[in-house]
Length: 239
Image (cartoon, rainbow, N blue to C red; front, side):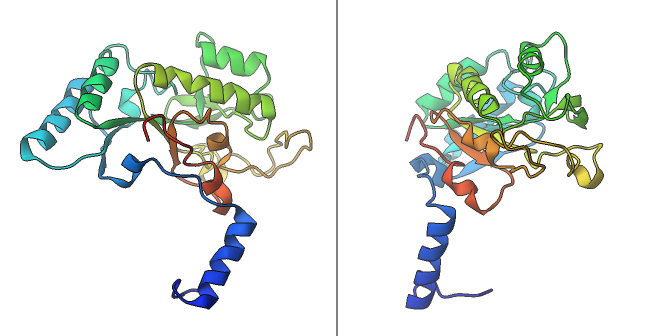
């Protein structure tokens, strides 16, 4: 049905059947239902602090502020720019004192950088799609974790501790189609093989990165399929 009155018995039955098929949604943190602000282009932590101060002065409610790709160190996921966002931990503390949660962006496309510990781990442990397949995202040449592999999910979940350590409360999983500027249709090739938990397949799911959460932060991906809700919003550490 394209339109449905969900209060009716028929639609309520449809909804229950859909829930049985795709699974129930994970519980959102209370602050996840509040007012959020995100903007591409905030240049540094002082600019973000200024946005929070503007809300305070006006007496406007605000649940969270989201850091876009400018906060990263060279667009490397799970990092913060050592110059412009060197005070991110202080920023998160200040926001927290005002009841504002901090959300950081994470892109599955990992920068191809032989000197970066995450890239070294991903390559040495064979955690990437292909051998590895190199596409292009914000950092330039990039590889893509194979989230259909248990080892990759465990590794990715461990990386969540890094933003948590500086006070981040939620992760914004972006570009998780996975996006590939160099790929046909803007994503990695359909024929690219994935582990499939030991059953090789070409079918990958954009929600897989959220399944890799360690359950300590709120995850909100930008794209995904129907069953994503089972793992896209795990319990936040500050519910």
